[in-house]
Each structure stands twice: as structure tokens, then as C-alpha cells.
Amino acid sequence: MLLATIEPTRSASLGSVDLSDARDRDLLARLRGGDEDAFRGLFDRYAPTAKALALRVVRQAHLAEEIVQEAFMAVWKNPDGYDGDRGSVRSWLMGTVHNRAVDLVRREEAHRRRAEDAIPEAYEEQADHADEVVEAIGLPEERRIVRAALAELPEEQRRVLEMMYFDGRSQTQIAEATGLPLGTVKSRALLGMRRMRGALEGIER
Image (cartoon, rainbow, N blue to C red; front, top):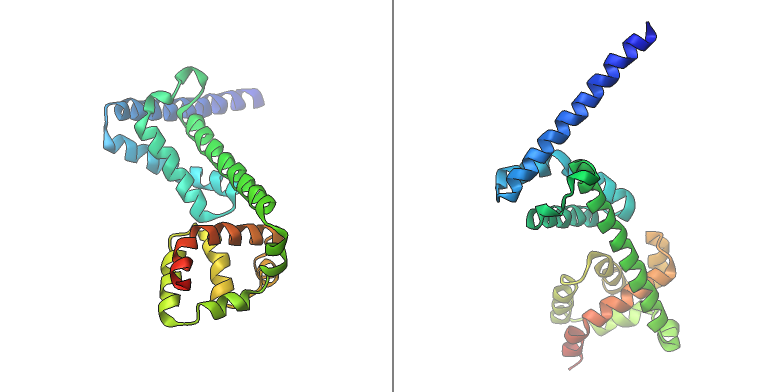
């Protein structure tokens, strides 16, 4: 009796999965023809799940959103990348998102290691004196230029430099406030300063 109850339930579940995948494949087939409605349909179906997956890997909502957008844009540009013999459309989409999230984490780690390796001893000794940086950009016009330059930085670098410049915090204090390793704070500050070098040189002149 129990087996008779389980089998119909299992068959219904499998049928639902098959129907869902059939709908996804239909959307993808229309997408190959440039159907924007099909793209929106696929995005609406899977974007929330894709963002949750990316967020588990990168731990930052704005990065997760960027990954999802980039992944779906890649699908829009190359829908032929899907191979029906290798699994469902859903698994392909989630795999694409997961791979991009992992790649981003690896790139961030590689950038951090390179930045830490590039930090000279003099920088290690002096970089924790944020009050000197704040004093160097004390005038309103200088602050305006710096804020404009900061706006062009990636969020994680911008946040560290804003806490240095405008809150007057040392890098040790920033590490304590954010929970980041001190080495990560130092590397983000260095990378950010390199990107802002042109603007800061203009101030010095």
C-alpha cells in the first residue's frame, strides 16, 4: 500500500521537473532567435535563485547582483552555449553563475596577495597614519576632487579610503570596525591609492 502511494507521487514529481525543463528549453530556443520576452522570462524564473547562489560564494550583495547580470548577459549573447545532453537549462544557468562567482573570489584573492607582496616596508611603517592623509586634503576643493576620484573606485576600495580620509581612522581601526584582516585593508588602500594617483598628484601641484 505504501509503495503504491510513493510511486504515483514520484512520477508526478518527475513529470513536473520534465515539464519545467521543457518550458526552459522552449524559452532558450526562442532566445536563440533574439526573443527579448523569452530572455526576460528566463531571467524572472531564475535570477532570485542565481543571486542567492552567488551571494553564498561572494558574501556581498552588490557583487552577487553583478555576477547574475553578467551571467545572464552571457546567456543572451551566446544561448548556443547550452548543451541539452549535459543537463537541464536550470543546472546550466546555475553552473554559469557559480563559476563566475568562484572566479571573482579567486581574482580578488590574487589581487590581494599581489598587493600585499608589493607593499614596501616603508609603506607598512607609515600607511597607518591616516591623520596625515586627512590633513593633506583639508580644503573644500581638495575634498571635492578626492570624492570624485573615490566615486570611480570599486566599492571595497572606496569604503576603506573613505574611512581613512573622511573618518580619520587608521587602517588598524578600519580592520577592527569592518572585521577585515589588516592585510586586506592595507592592500585595498594601496590599490585604491594607485587608481587615484592622478587626482592626488593634481592636488599636490
